[in-house]
Length: 388
Image 1 (cartoon, rainbow, N blue to C red):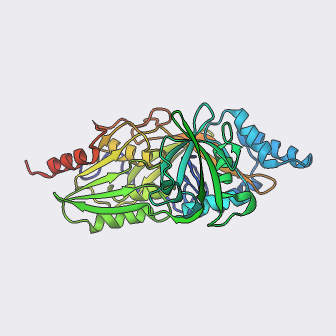
Image 2: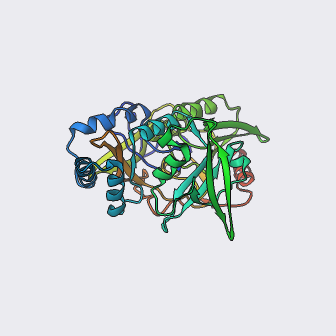
Image 3: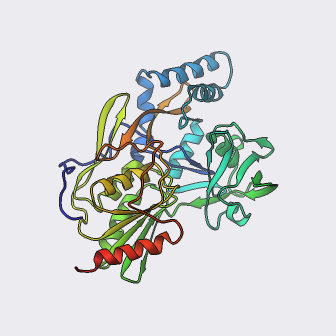
């Protein structure tokens, strides 16, 4: 797992690239994931104003323009256009929602501390609950179905709209205000009233176990998380590393590439296409290429986290342990609509360094493990670190 390999190229990812790509649309109730890179999220939509939107974007823009001319809601019209297009990962944000989206990627948000996604049947399912959050205190669990917010049914609504209701965007609801959730778990249906809170995302945590093994867990790729991973690797004592990406629903792709740079000496991390044009993402040189590394994944590992996993696996840098990842490998691009709202629509897909597509397939681990996956990973690491 050391040295250079066929994918190495002397190029670095441009952290100030003009293009913003969104690799995930799974939204937290008060947080959202998936963009490249943070600095560009604020500029790219404004640049898109002067660009002529093509295809999918043009249809959504036209729907918003017609709604404005008729005195109707551009956001609602754009959301309907996205729904008709069949773009599973497309999303429309009001101007305020998009600002909060960016704030969430900065690591702070107001919400109740649950993550959710839209299922194919239109239901909204809770995928993760933040420890210590209002949702966790109320006993909400992953797998629960969110049926209503403040009496409004959620079935069939875009996830972005449900997130807006949870946050209280329409009334600028601050931390401390309440929101009533209708929930379902199996045959049980009930209502919980939660109090919104100002939450922060501690996306990178580090701990040491016997062996020695350093466990670096990344829950999402928010601003500076890539540098935190690199710092953790530099400061880790001699021994192996477990990079725990279980439940990581994505985030800023530039941060995932920076995290890859902690373990690679430059070279290719992923390729992607935007309306047919091929692009590439490269790690920075100088990463630790000798320390034994296991990447831990599961069905909640998505998007930018899958991009990172695929790069480390393809390039022979890490042994991947766990269960098959989610399979979110499509690329979204933002454009500013006439009223200031933002549409992020699918324009292409990304591939791992060996050319594997991830969308709808996920990444298969080298070693399958469900229960006891972390102890299994630590055991594998100790074996890798033992001299032969």
